[in-house]
Length: 115
View (spheres, rainbow, N blue to C red):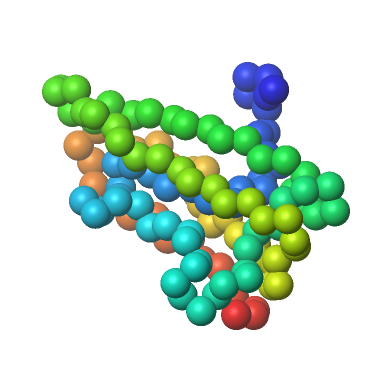
């Protein structure tokens, strides 16, 4: 339960994607089962920094015709803590206000110290 205008998630986001910016094949996923990263996961629960999760869906209609949205999110929960806990550093710009039909670039820089 978030009040309108409140800072949701306190800046702690596990995964985000923009439907209008994804490839035709779909958004980049976080299914690590076939990657050699088995056991690496985001810890969620009473003994972790993330005690609960919420799903927010924001829609943006960019075309005149109706677009059928068949995107989705799939979560797997395991009883044991992850072998190696993962985390996301959110990189975004809150300065952008792009008018219609204007091309614009925004650079966001982040130093990676590990990984």
